[in-house]
Image 1 (cartoon, rainbow, N blue to C red):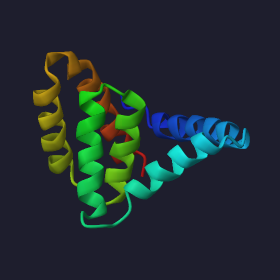
Image 2: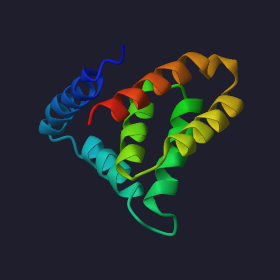
Image 3: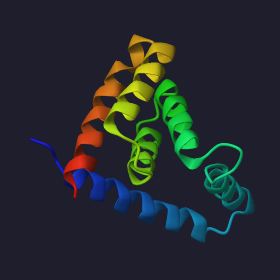
Image 4: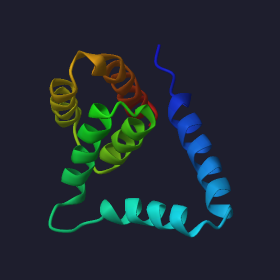
Length: 117
């Protein structure tokens, strides 16, 4: 059974905590958040490519929250299941077998995104 609340739970927590962190008015943290947001806008590389790159990096670095974020952004960009699976396969290849638990959670979250509509 796919838990479609996973998407809402992740986004609610992320938004709540980001708001709290940014309310501290720390210039460095605000600049890091801004840099992160702007790095994934259209440029020499399109947004789709940047999201897939972010997904690979997040997989290799084993950051489940980052993987979820890039999966959702990829989904919103219209990236297909096949493209995501190929991207995750590259991340798993580069990251090694230690990445497999993160691959499982990524696959589960992608299913939740597909079933959330």
